[in-house]
Image 1 (tube, helix red, strand yellow):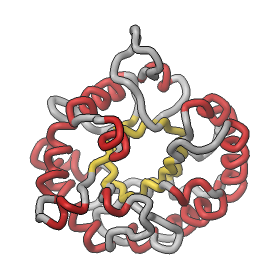
Image 2 (cartoon, one colour):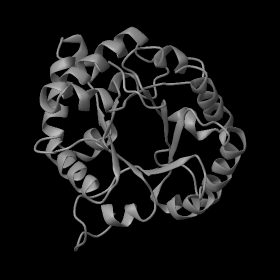
Image 3 (tube, one colour):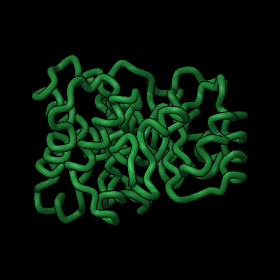
Image 4 (cartoon, one colour):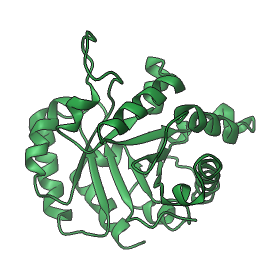
Length: 254
């Protein structure tokens, strides 16, 4: 029941890279993967580098995304970035990342508000969901992820521009990813959850990415699974060689 699209590889740089470092990194990545047509590659740098990288990626096969946004279009919200501001610069936006949830108290309702606003201005939200180690050990992983999906997408129709990224929180940045089989089981469950609310066709066409210690060495094992349509990559996306190798390996799978 996999999505028919190309594998999607998204690099989430988090709070790393100055403008100079970011443009150098993207230029180096372009040299190695620009010709790859069967993988949809996206880089998500800090806000400060978006404009410079947008110029670098003009007419490129590489897509551009942001790491977060506020749900209001305009207003007195000092320090925030609106969806309409981002829509001038990029195509994607990561929303609901576990670091936003755990460090900044972002709720499912806040994620829902952001997804709704992103879709209204034509952005493609990458909605992050995932469970803690305690949740998994207690047998609550499926229930917790299902709640994040149901509440995060409440009253949102349709979802044809949505991407979902499953990140088991216990695997992020630990060098110990979930096994491909464990990831597949959760991805299949996520797709079934989507099917209940949006129908099998929408569920099947929604890309679902795995995130959590993805590397060039293990990306093919994940992409070989029926319901894994790509990867959300953290640390490995900060080096042009490791990220390019990961994309090249992904191009040799689906």
